[in-house]
Image 1: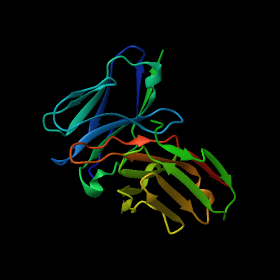
Image 2: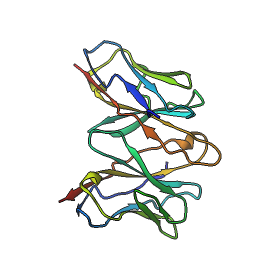
Image 3: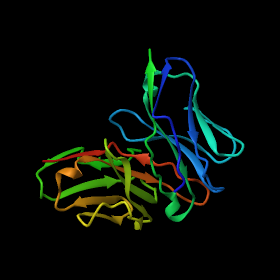
Length: 112
Length: 116
């Protein structure tokens, strides 16, 4: 499975934008970039995913580098409820590659 | 929709006892995943089913662990006999994987297992 590298932790202030980086230099052409987050004492939840183009949804934006070797999850205005572990995951498509393998993620702390 | 439902939410048992964790996936989903989370090892994928068939069980720790999916609406993860090192939070997730989507995973709230 292709690996991702994320900072162990980051801090942000409430109502400021947050940029969470992820490196995935060994990404293959068919790998999708998925982001999940895990709030304290909860199961992980889907945030966003993309293949080549930047993506936006109600939770966040995903900016994907042109060579696809890195990506950035953008929270436009962090709130205290965004404090969580954020996981960047590469996911294949089809058969056994549908599985999601979690790394250690980035622990985001949001200060009031 | 009620989401992925797991039971029990908490289980405390003694070493050597059999433990059965249950999962009801979201109706209409065709894939089911069992994960285990500990502080030391993070989130580990144990087994993955597609259309009720195990596709990848390479994460199952040893023969003491077994998982079944007798139908599309129910799965179990059994540990027999249980050991203290099995203490963890076990998550079940389901997904709809098809030709036109990459299948977002929906996770349950987890079953916290403590083996004394």
